[in-house]
Image (tube, rainbow, N blue to C red; front, side, top):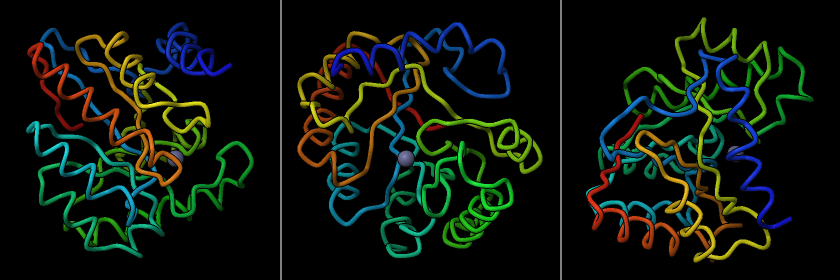
Length: 215
Ligand SMILES: [Zn+2]
């Protein structure tokens, strides 16, 4: 199971991707550039350590923020943007799009848009659904609001109870392709895994000539 979930979330989704061209799974790139994404922040525990490590390697990333966390830690949102990263919408309270009402989901997304745009003074251009659960309504909302739904092509499962830093970093390093979109988490449940995995990922891959950009 611990190996199967990242494997299925990485390889199992590929056959479906061409049916959803409005959703971004991977950037069409020939150069060794990849796109790190961090979901669920900002958090008092992890945001600053993650930013420090990214800065050590001159790497940019995209942070899909939970609106209520952003309202609680506006200084961290500003720190993310000040470091040259981009931020995207990850709803206000992280409900499951497959079970919440459409009206409820729209309110979550709109409230987060307002909070984040107020903080950064620029329009949001990306959204990632909680739990990676897209819906038809979500696709319509994103199209209407000009927020691209960002999925992924590399999901190492840093949030799993069985995750270890070395397993997560190895998974990313072994599955990376030019233009890959990698999912990691700015979430206290990943505290023992993700910061160390990120350092190994960046150290290994920047030595191999990879660079990391924001979406
Ligand atoms: Zn999330």
